[in-house]
View (cartoon, rainbow, N blue to C red):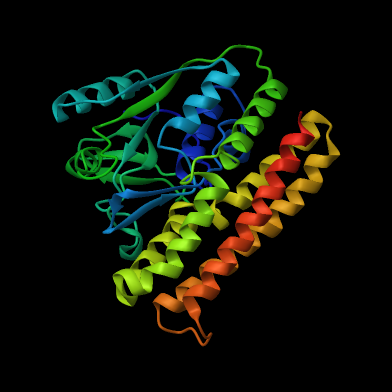
Length: 332
């Protein structure tokens, strides 16, 4: 049982799954375009949720939101299901495969046996495509992998029903209707406006204000929770930025690529200039990650390391605030 599904490697899982599923169904749309239309660029600090014993930080919205927004803004229909029963989840997926329907799944990372050990930790918002099944294995297109791979039946069930924060509950999704004509320009503008609104939101834990809040927390953590825990928290920030926020810089480079595409489609050269600016901001995020990693690996030679790294984050927040105000004005 195998569908004629073409695997394309991508920088990030949900964008890659969405792009690959839409391409399979006749809509040729790039990963950056999915990310931009789906308003995937984000920042949120959730101290009341713990992931790997550290406050949750995300550089993107909740799992599933990007693809749902893309569907709404392009007039697509997507079917999305969760299950309380493993048997029902298996039955629904197998039925799709019998009907030649490649299917997106949300899964936990920790038990993905084809991942290197250093990438396997408790994170339940990974996405992949199942495009076939044999007597022993499911055929997997994981967009962050170079080639297709497999999981045996028990392994796939285990990752579909991983426990903990953002438990996937067997979630599966796939397009069921794609219109012949889509309004790409309108969808791009809506996606950009939504991102600007999120990143400039007045809420203290979201967008540029959320980045500033984390910077202030970094300055306080050493005296409040100790250096060992502070370093663990820094490692979590970097992991979410550079490993979960794949593509680098907390998705800033992917967003720059989206703005380059959008500039051509909207015939707006300002977006091209802003794409270059976002790339520079992405470089600052990457520098922050390198310096933070030196701290938690005890390799930093800087003095007053926590205040210094926090100030780097405050600089990034200032630049992003200016950037998103300019971006909002560019498409108004």
